[in-house]
Amino acid sequence: RKEVEQDPGPFNVPEGATVAFNCTYSNSASQSFFWYRQDCRKEPKLLMSVYSSGNEDGRFTAQLNRASQYISLLIRDSKLSDSATYLCVVNDNSGNTPLVFGKGTRLSVIA
Amino acid sequence: NAGVTQTPKFQVLKTGQSMTLQCAQDMNHEYMSWYRQDPGMGLRLIHYSVGAGITDQGEVPNGYNVSRSTTEDFPLRLLSAAPSQTSVYFCASSYSADNTEAFFGQGTRLTVV
Image (cartoon, rainbow over all chains, first blue to last red; front, top):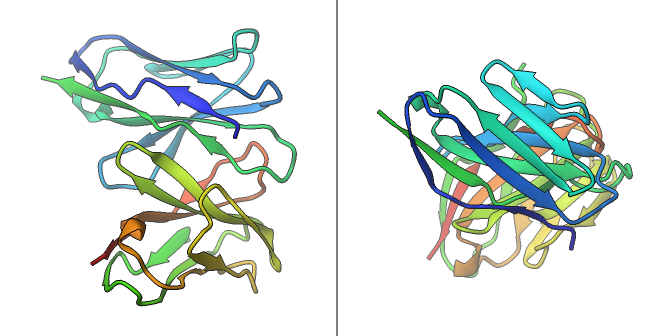
């Protein structure tokens, strides 16, 4: 079974803090990488894709390190609304293989 | 555009009962899948389909059946419910299995007593 590993947390951080999550994957053939966000008792939703050159979207930055087989998510200036579980997702782009989800990292931003 | 619609949202079953969880998408996506999510276990793939008439097993298929007679619909059948199937079930769809965004339904919270 191809695996995606994440620290489950929880990460408890104050508002305004910078927090980073890492995710490691075991399948070296993985080609596509994503971060999904899941709010409590809600469905997962795509937060951002992770490109080889890195990807930034406002306060969120995602990085890929193929040599070490990990991806990261950095959240700057944390908001209360960032409190959620962040899921790391990979795919080998073979055309027939489902996305592989990590178990998620829980973030709580505290006022 | 409704996206992915799952019904019902909540369900309580008695052990041994059967039922079908419905999933429909209106985005003309070829790829659809069913996951269950349990505390501490993350999302686990039950079954998936790469197109109408094609289904395959995921990580935890036992006790579940699926069919894909149309592009839009991908129902999940519980054959004989067991307490171990108490979980939150999510249906998802995407344009293809490759590097594209997966859209999830709102989930079905199933309790088997």
